[in-house]
Image 1: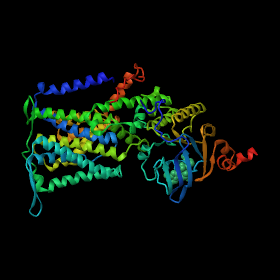
Image 2: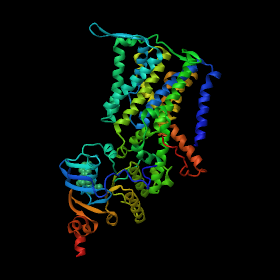
Image 3: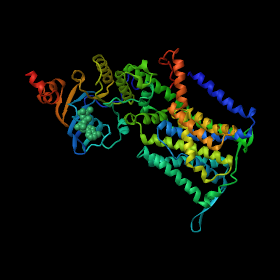
Length: 275
Length: 351
Ligand SMILES: Nc1ncnc2c1ncn2[C@@H]1O[C@H](COP(=O)(O)OP(=O)(O)O)[C@@H](O)[C@H]1O
Ligand SMILES: [Mg+2]
């Protein structure tokens, strides 16, 4: 049995709809620059929440603070009751909160399969002494991990590429591999930072289908994305950020009509054009 | 390369090395092989750090020297004055026990160096490791009561092992030590191979390749860098202990920087981050000086040949010899081979 087996429920013990990630009064500063100011929002169990906003709005900074890559100036970040503030990224991953990066990030020199095996790190059960002594349990665990890695590659549609070096993949597949690595870490909350940027429409369509499969497993998703068709198509709720502040929070349809969002995100010209 | 081919080639290599003394009875050459083998063990241990985690340890000889001194001192026994009339003394212990203590002590030093220097890495680790090696050398040179300083530790006992059914083996002289070094080298190879093909080794490689991504999936940087340093230091210490009980005299020169440089050259030319790299590099740079001496090349010219060869290898094969050969093999085999699909592995029942 692997944890990505569709027939089994994911680790999520919490009821769907209950708040999973609670961000309260989050502020992030870089020297004199305030990237995020007093940001408060919640992501509920099992939902897809999109964080949108123009470039420089502070979306990636918020991701970095939630996943421990930068220190917040103030505020609190709580996931399933556990405060994440002050934890290191690897500790946060152990809480089930795993992110991808805006700038494509894989293990370039390793084969695709090994990329996913690295992602399975937290699922491996191998004590260093057992490894050195070559105990049979380690071998069994490795076989189990390989199975899980193949399952994940099949899920994202990269099983045909398993033995190729990551660096040799075309761009669209690299972005799929990033998601495969993150999924391997068995997230209950997955943060995706502009996963389809640079993809063509058919690749984006395939990615939306993958997102559907991911959420079918009960994984909660926090998505940063500029592709509005995708955002409106996959999100349960949308939070719009502008210059570090949340200016709107609601279902996609309401966000699409919100004049503040239209002004901030799509620009004044768009508002005038619509009349 | 298929698994069967790999296994067959490993076995034939081992068979070749095991039978070598039977048809090659030049004792001096056997000595060269023993010293080369000890250096290869040290280079393999360095490769774990330099090749797999990507941390440049320029003080690696410290762990080798610590292994040599600790094993010698525990097997010789010592008495030192610590404060006024207070003395600390140790009765001589069996050599196998001394070697074990040496490995553990070197590993412990690795643990401390790792903990200190991986807070901030890169250049800082280089500096800490170099300074550590220099400090250990100065201690060996100046703590006369313990180490005899430049007068060296003499008459170090040789290893005696009682093997049930075989009787006692005395590891004295060339032939037994050749097999001892061969055994230690195989052990080291197997340990490093197991490590790098496990969760731990993948974590080390992942940190080298892309640290932010590695931490995002839960890899604890410090934990796995320290683990690599401990194992690496312990194995270097083992090499040092084997060396001490073979040559049976140890002086502070075992800490010389040039030995670290030699290990680095072996790893880099052979191919860092590959299992065979340090062996290939070690054989070339361990045996080459003797070959040159055989041709009665003057020592100065020897060094020039040494240097030029190293520059040529690094210039034309920047990844090292082993990766270059592997790529060539892949290109050759890849023309006819079909890409392997998902293997149908039956996962054994979980206990
Ligand atoms: N490491 C950093 N150092 C200094 N300024 C930064 C850093 N990261 C982001 N910023 C600044 O913070 C603001 C928000 O950036 P970012 O979070 O990347 O926005 P977004 O992801 O919404 O495009 C920008 O003005 C950006 O220049
Ligand atoms: Mg961004």
